[in-house]
Length: 344
Image 1 (cartoon, helix red, strand yellow):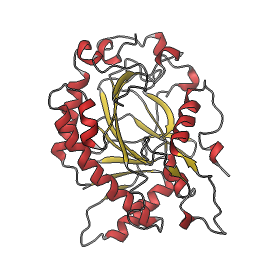
Image 2 (cartoon, one colour; image 1 turned 120 degrees about the horizontal axis):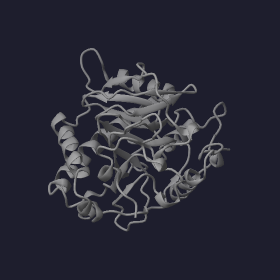
Image 3 (cartoon, helix red, strand yellow; image 1 turned 90 degrees about the vertical axis):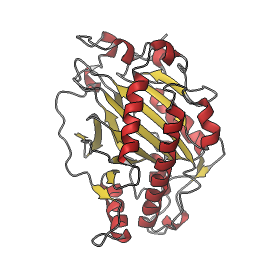
């Protein structure tokens, strides 16, 4: 059985050989921090109105696929409560963790805890992380399957999921308006909501280990709360660091938004590296189509014109996710992207 990194890594002096990445996959010793990633204040005031915020977000989605938001409506206390809660969760005993451990993503409840990637026993080399994933919507149907420990987990994470959902649809409305679509355009295609909490313990040599390789999220959009440095984005052929901002959310565009926007917005490729001295816990919330329904995704008809022809074919979201997972299960090096088979 796979062993959680958080259960054995404390005090290790070197990276075990099955966690040492081959040279071409190592993050290296130095990556520049990108100081140009937009930080967008969502609070309207005398100097900034809604149209200004829409313009800032649209530009960020086009140029970076990444931005950070402040004054987003999720309280600082709630964000701190999440940091404390997940610190406790990943410090729980191995026996408590085994109660929700799953070596596959096919757990009937949708809630599962695993280490490294989704195919641990088929991996040649492992990621330096443990991950808890679970769906969040509809909340009343999902919370009974969430972890029972810490005892406040379901109550606190439930409140957090509600507030992040409010923020998420607010930002999706701003993105829709920036594209020239109606407010509420993404309401149906964004009904699915899930969380992935990635925990990266301190690593004795971050230059040879990886938290997770470069990838673009298959969802509509991702909202990330991070406490330590480790997130890097790929832009103009280079990896660039994304410094955490206290009580901000990192927002990144997923493949579904790239497709619905007919290529006007770009999915953001990113990865996570490890930290020498401090543990890092990232709390990601994903919005996308409901996986339990046969949702059809295609470029917005309003964005397909004679001068901007349709770039992607229509498809069922479940099929896209299956193809996406199959792509990332292929051995490295991989060619192309998961989008290639959907291009016209």
